[in-house]
Length: 267
Image (spheres, rainbow, N blue to C red):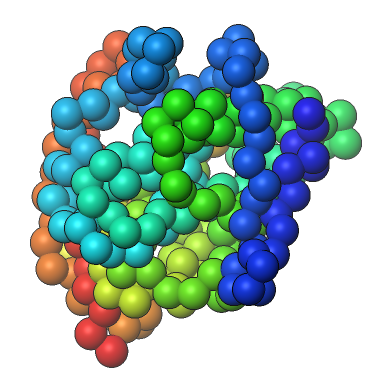
C-alpha cells in the first residue's frame, strides 16, 4: 500500500474528513516513534520511551470527557494515551505527504540535490509510521479518527477541540509560529506545547542548524519562553503553567529535557 492509498474521506454527515483505516498485521512493515506495549505482541521499541510519563509530558492536563487533537501523531502513542486517560474523542493529525516536511539545506543531501528522487523514498518511510499507528489502533481497540493534511493549514471542518497537543513538533518545522497560528484556530480551550525551550523572557530564538552536522537536518529552532508568551497572546491564549521533565531518548541512549506549556484560551 502506498502513502496515497489511504486518502481521507468525508464522514457520512460531512462533518470532517477522516482517513480510512489501514489493516496491518505484519509488524515488520511498522516503525514506532514511541515505545509502546501492544496486546499479543509485547513491547515495541521506539525512538522515545514515554511510558509512565504521559501525564507529565502533557502538563498534567485533565482528559475525561474532552475532545482532543494530537498534532503530528506519528505512531500514535499520545493519541492512544489520551484515550486511555478518558478523552471522549481523539483525532490524530499527521502530514499527508513527505513534501510537507522541510529539511535544512545541506547541498549534498538527496532532498536538496534531487527532491523528485528523495520524496518517494521518504513516503515509504512515512508509510511504516502509519502502519505502526494503524496496527496499534486495531490492537488497542482505539476509536481515534485520523486526518492527514498540512500542519500550516489545519482543516477547520474538523471542528474545535478542548485540548490540542503540539508535542515535540515545533522544533522540526521551518516556520513554527505559522504552524501554531494554524493549530490555534481549532483550539477551543487548552493548547499544550512540549518542546525544547530557552529559559528567558526575551523574545529570542536559537537556530539549531549546524553545518558540521548534516545528519541532524530535521531540527530547526528553539524558542525562548518569551517568544511563546507573546505569540500565544497574539493568538488569544495565556500561559497557565510551564513545567519541565527529562525523557528517555532511546535512540540517543540519553535523557533529554523538554518543557511543557499549558496555555488556555482567554479571548
